[in-house]
View 1 (cartoon, protein in one colour):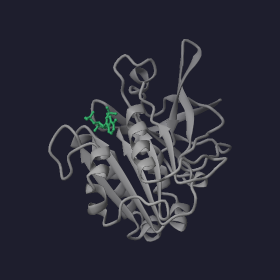
View 2: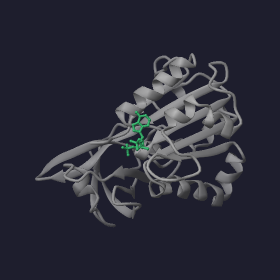
View 3: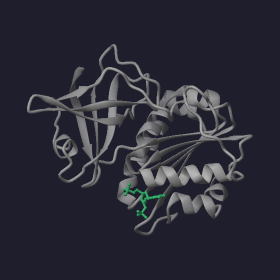
Length: 253
Ligand code: A2P
């Protein structure tokens, strides 16, 4: 188990916050993977799966978390401050990795809520742009305020000289909200089914020849988007057997 120091925290809404920590020299991961992270409570480790939101080349680690009222871990974790200690398991793992997908033209990263975290890592990894011509990040939340982490991320990429050169115009950010007004209103599943997503980004509907999809969100969301992938003829992949789409459930409890 690694013991790491919190470097900064950012509270987006009463339900969402992000934090950065030091990174142990021996902590290696592939962009998109998750690790078990948490706090020591009454002398015992209390851990949950957290996607690493920072890219694998970064020398700090970043995480994006929900705050669950009365959640055993997040009710405590939301109070961490600069200088506090978190614990981190040694071995990151996961299926939202480039190695689990066959080569393709367009990469769709479909997220709801904190499910954007693994994609925050992948869209800052140069390898993503070596492998795909276009990367389309979709982020859907209840409210516009909950989209802020994604907007900050896009701004950060644009302002980073090296990264913006690598990314160029390959990255598209598509957002929707379900509980108030916004450019696109509705669940991502609806916006896939009625063609809004594809019309907006200027692509044809998913096709196993060209399109690859990664999905991260709640259990219901991942199941429903998986259904949409399968209706378009895409096949689920894994580390052992790369294919057209991969899934991971965002930590929600
Ligand atoms: P909704 O407002 O209709 O529940 P949460 O914060 O609860 O994880 O939700 C994040 C976003 O995911 C919300 O916009 C929510 O819409 C949406 N969502 C919830 N269930 C599904 C589902 N089965 N398929 C697609 N989107 C979903």
